[in-house]
Image (tube, rainbow, N blue to C red; front, side):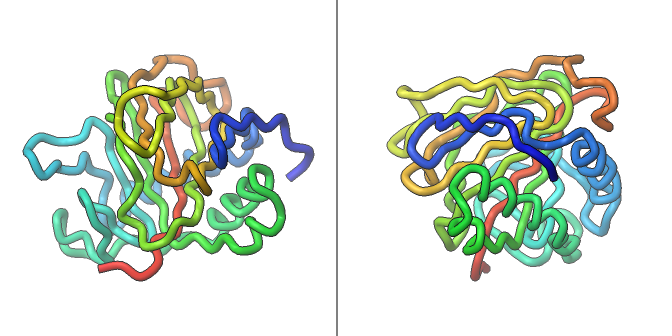
Length: 216
């Protein structure tokens, strides 16, 4: 995949890899999303337990996520089984773990699920933890399309201290170790900042790869 750009540790175990994805992989992810979104469980804005809906559209691979648990079938949508998790996406995520945490961490990393979020203009994501998984393996995030503010906080609560990082198309972000259960969110999108040729005309794709392990 060629030489990789710089590595920025935002917090212990939380690593920003700017420009990590070459344009060819960005295009591949954008094209794959169009296929995934038309699969047996279509892209949808998940309903929240307290009422209302998230402002992002989500497609699940391998395991279906609904707030706040995993299942094999999308019982909150149409009861169908989600698409399998692609081996090539797992390989891409392992390479990112290698860049962030080294060869031994990458060798141990065996992801089995991805949540793919489509942000349109005005969409955001509140501060939350990724804690429904049955393991503490790292989460790998890939960005394609418009830039955003990614707010990376702490494990104790949704407030400060946190660090705001601008994620651009092609960036990867890996968080594990002491930062695995840190709160994080996307308070702001920068519309019409997607680079020409990335495969996405407007909006942002966020592909988050994780290890679910044994789940419901």
